[in-house]
Length: 287
Image (tube, rainbow, N blue to C red; front, side, top):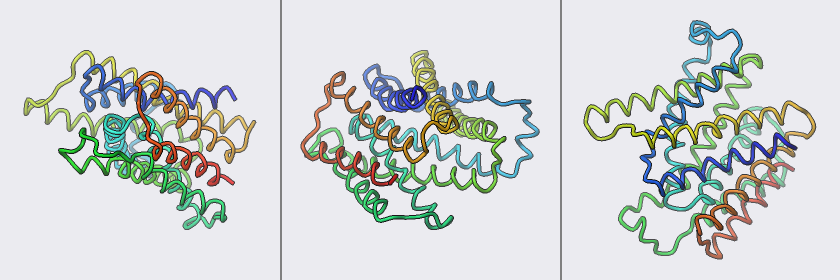
């Protein structure tokens, strides 16, 4: 239970820290790049007999770099969701993406897809809409595309999870998991750094000291949210069907409670109903 609790805290910290970025005027994209540099640095120490040549010779390296580029895009959009809609909505959008690996497993690997899971998927879709529902909010009145951020994060997170699931089952051996994780973080870093370099030469952005501090603060829980989840799964004290809903519900609940008391976020009745749908949907999906 200790590793599960740490996984929940780390995952919730991701969306909470994005809210602090807004408060302390931290430029999000450079901070996210520093975040992936931090993740890559930490991941390096968990790889045995590290060799770049070995990584580049793997059959999955191309997929890893493609995924890395997608990861940093979705991570940035998650930060914008937290900015415009709040940490609770960002957590719901990110965590409910888990419905896609479930559907993917049912279609590709012919795993059971019970009536309970169908109900869970339906509740999840409703939850994303209701939890992000705002009434005439001036913060995005100038740009209606912002309204689609929670849905994009929801779809993008689910797509990433499904691709990673496919890679783990098809190409990546169990012993290569730490190397694969390192490659994903490195690919995200490379993609982000390329964009930042072009912006720098156009004199549009750079990295200040506050972005470095913010990125490191984000990178540590980003890496260890995965690390502690894997440790919980490998310990075998609980079934994965119990661990995943607990972690996802715990993340949404922790982010919401913190945002209500610290950031004074205000949720409408519709938003509360959306959060309830999210929790119920997660429970049904793992029946």
